[in-house]
Length: 219
Ligand code: G6P
Ligand code: MG
Image: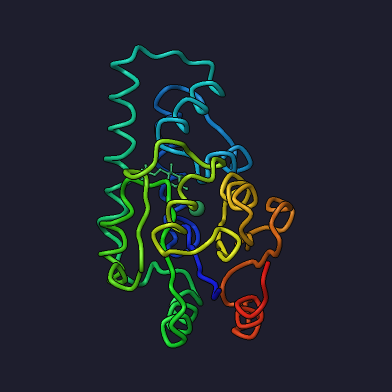
């Protein structure tokens, strides 16, 4: 059976991870504390709600249910302020070359993201029609590292989990891909993404021959 590819969105296809960081950091600062970039790694791939829980925990802050909801909405508003100013140029370098390669070779690919903003972002990038399936934060109940999002994406492409190759920039996402028994390709820092089957700093470091080889062999 031929293989298929699943892409995470934030920090893999598009440079929105920095906007999530800025928006979360503003929220923390407004509540009177700060967190580091290292702590931020633990937020990548994590749902909006779980992210806020982690952050409040770091700051030792407790909020009422109502205030928790208000802070989530504020964060998203702030985040969308950045997103709405962005255009196709925020696609990360080397990504479109890989998407074109996959299209030309009839390799199906899906999106597997925790974000509830995934569809509008793909639209801004004008790539929403390229995906065989889009699975995002509105489709799943269990957050990464639970493999649900990737398993649904595989199912929608009619592929077995083992046939799928996942591109991820987050620790939680790499773990989700591994738990699903997919091939995990980390995009980012080798020291952070130690659990991935392969790691590249970014897509410009990936030779098309490498992808071709992966596609040819079984996991
Ligand atoms: C991605 C990002 C996280 C973000 C999550 C939810 O996984 O890496 O930083 O918190 O999506 O995104 P959303 O756009 O729904 O707030
Ligand atoms: Mg990501």
